[in-house]
Length: 634
Image 1 (spheres, rainbow, N blue to C red):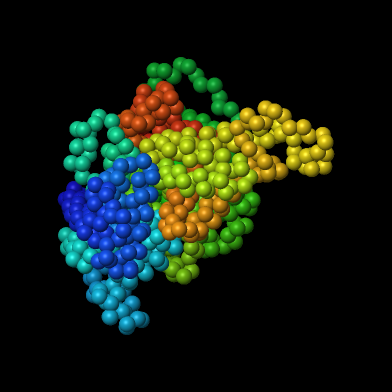
Image 2: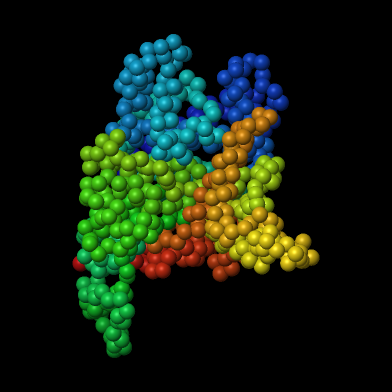
């Protein structure tokens, strides 16, 4: 995409952001009595109708939820305003991109004259009685339909969904997105990435740097690191990590050797068999020319094959998902080749080879997009906007595959899970946390939950650098070890006279009453998540909205922990640069003492820890080392 086109996207993004922030700011203050300084009128004004009163209750709950995270009153309002604006913009940008791909009927390109809306009105002629003839209801119905597979962006229960632009602002937003000079960008995959980058201006970044050398909070850290990764960088790093792993598993017999244009290969490669050692090198080759060195035999250690469903890729700072999108391209070819290989190993997930689970090639091809998103691709980011956009981009990439296969929408499998998560603290409502943990049985579940909540306080600033899985593993091991040293409950029931309580038990860290089975330790996290779902459903004294926000934030936190707990064959990234935020510098120095306070170094150190045996890391700041070899495909 050329610079002139990017400039047009930048202007449209900035104009849309300004319009939405002014509109929603005026609504907060003028309609709902929520001032920019964070002051909120204790009761809704008499000018509000019943529907507006419900909206106000939700918005106030959302802002109070922000405050519980430890921000000031004014910052809570500002955060809510910004989140509402970017979510609204991302949704309508998404609709434009879906229209361009034929994935939804024309819905916003011609406003109320769009063919999809006309058809919608034909099915419900009574809509003409509504003030906007039902256009908002139509758009919201599209959001609801899309949220079944892209919940992170289109879920209207999200706290950023409670406001809707007024008629003038709504028409203005559509006018911006429907500008003739950007009509051609909506069919380009990278457009959403540029919208993500341009939402925050260069002036904002400069102001942040002028005011502080190091980022002061997680938002500044995210904004300072929002740079679109060039396509050639993405391809080079992915070709030489994911592509290289599959190339070695197949001992060079793969379409990727020609399809990966940046894959580094040598003309004389010898693939070793299991247990076979490379011959000892002759030390007399030090004076060889570069051409002679390239012709030398290279021995490649044996790499066992894997079922494609067991190959895991992580981008620990995923942004708009550029690395994951290209990995999707390679994985499609990998799945197809694996199905045709009778020697493919069994999957760790199902215990069967690919051909046993998908008995025809056509059946497999229909399921490949779903398999890639649900099994292979994982991403973490501290910016919720990035997570929205990355999830959308991968979903659209899946739709493209089905369209190329000529698979109709009602015939392709539904994507039910995404592994793209936001790194953010657990919810800050201490009263709800105490209420929730007090209801967990056995008691040790509540104590483990408290440890998780405390450890996650730095998640928004540390992101994937947080060693949350190690913390949890350590504390669960400690609790389990304490339990193993306790008399078993069965013994106390059968032979109570033989069980004498030990005085020192009163000083032990965990209350293990009620734990009777060793399997409990494997089920602890699932039991906490199930309890959160039940907690969210309760209603009491008008706190239902805050309860739901608390429970959903906690569930997202556990999804982040799950991603961190896995081991990966490939970690790809354009890592964050610079130093940690002010508040996390002591923590960073303690956990990454050899990283010289450099986030990029810390990220590579943590990425290496998350690799499975034989895994590889690809990162942008190492590209200069490899760039001279990019012409070695032979």
